Length: 483
Image (cartoon, rainbow, N blue to C red; front, side):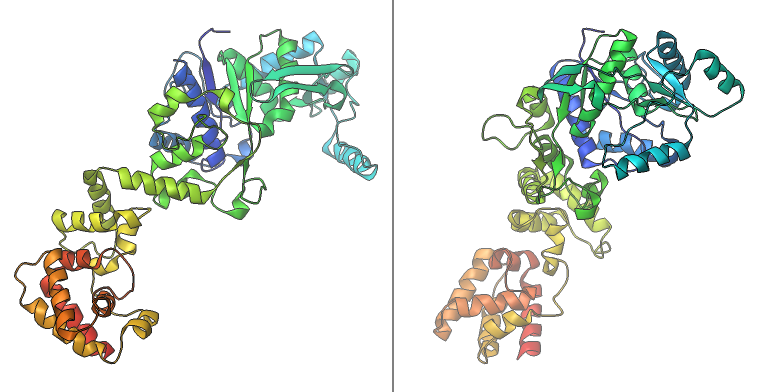
């Protein structure tokens, strides 16, 4: 095995990239880059029935979008290819034949009907279901005869019947399992394709993978993989099994309780930096109170020793907070670029909105926005006149005398010349004094009149952004509609 750190992310092309898959890819990437190693992408497509057209391209595009670029993989040869398992079938068959010759594997001719019968009997007896090793000791001439007769068969590994297998996991510590609980796993299916168990071991060895970093769900299979390494006489890689991702109710993260594909979160407007930062903390922490990390900072800080054993809760509220923080810290020029791109696809696409206006909206709304779309959706009154008024606010803020008070305010606004926010504020105070009322009796109905709602950014910011003429038009319209 190479002394260089070499890790791999090996997804199946069965759809979009799951957030759990993104975490596995990210941890492998961070570990490799921290140690100046190589990050390999391998496509495990031996289950051809589940392959989804375009899934490989989507996986690569999503990883690239997140900034997780692989060093070797499809289209980026590093001398260990091919990197797609369906292109490596002869390699697996050769190694399976070698195991048979060495006595570590055997051909099994049991039909699906017989296997189902065994399973039902074991279930009825409340036993764990496993193959009964019926074909394990068939004589060589019997195997030859059945092969010549064209009987369908699989190849199974020959697990030792006694003893205990022990191995070290970087995250789990010492793991031990008795051979007697392991099944004689199928390693070559009847269609000639390998199962995951053979392919992953052969590929990891031939690609010189030094560390196998993968999800906890593969931990029960690891003893079988270690046995295969021993059967072949190969040096073991180091193993690290990542904790499960959990819903807030501590159930396993699944589609049934919400979005699980990275594409879902991307399409909702989450920034890649927030997603990567969030996913990094699903099992790992830096050992202090810091929460905001760039990808480069994660590379510097990451270590497998700081990955915990217990399941990591996928808390969307924390992801939202991170997205809010990234938007708040983003340079204005970048926010402006993203806002323009959003508006170009919105109902306001035809409006002539200059940069000065949009930057004013950004400054007014940034503390209230989690997503770029919030800059528009939470303040539509910057882009169109209100046609309706929040009735709860109307009942609370628009009194019988409010109309005449607003007309007095209109008189003050009409006298303003190129007003800024402070001029609108002075005019409102002057109107309140002349009416001998509190400024709040003008502020709240004025906000309702110009925005249609009762909350938002500073009122005088709104007035300065939409301008004197628009303010007067909206206030006049509200007086007529609400009086």
